[in-house]
Length: 314
Image (cartoon, rainbow, N blue to C red; front, side, top):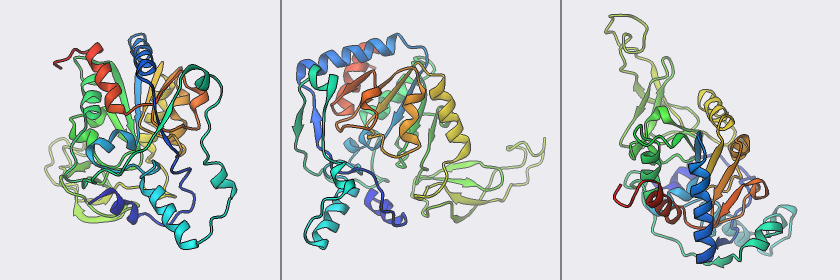
């Protein structure tokens, strides 16, 4: 299944946020300076949390949603063509691009035109350099990143080997189904189907001893499994959401990677930390509050970060 097919599962929803803003890129000198500052911030921090969005998976062939060639952007363009003459509305005027203040004074950013990349299905997509780097930084032997929060449903953090105990997926995962009785999760190799916590037709095979219901009983739980994908109006999973807030609140640095920070309440999570860095090619609603903004592909930034923090042959 591709990401546009996933989007097609969701119910109709008019307010998908600002879409189609231009993508920007730093000059070479500016990028080098900013990555050096980012590395310094990471080195001086004791509790680093990462929040990821669709921009960390585009190199895997999975389209984003609000970029120039994003799913919602293309959908909006199609609606405008069908509707004929364009009308200037409050929402459309708010999507105009603007760089002001310190960001404008410190760095010259240039708009880059991007063309659509071939789309990969969720099943065939493989973790990007960023996914693998995050997993390495969160490993027990490195232990630089304490927790990872993702808004993505593609399961690429799991596929990269990042333990479930060290990350949460706030909007669900198309490969994960969950028991409605004991809450045991099953990560599959295939799209389990559904949206908004529907029954998948499978049952939990965990033993009662495994889930702590009995000390020796081998009877299975047998609870119905449900999908974990959120629809627009669904509440965030309580346990994951509370964990995400707690981890950000005790962090001294949040790295917001590849996210436009436009979907709430997840978008405001970085503001709970002492400082946060944004690595994203589009402007976000929280740019003015960030300690640092890097306009570059996330993979490019993480490659340099890993060279310095871990070494070239990690």
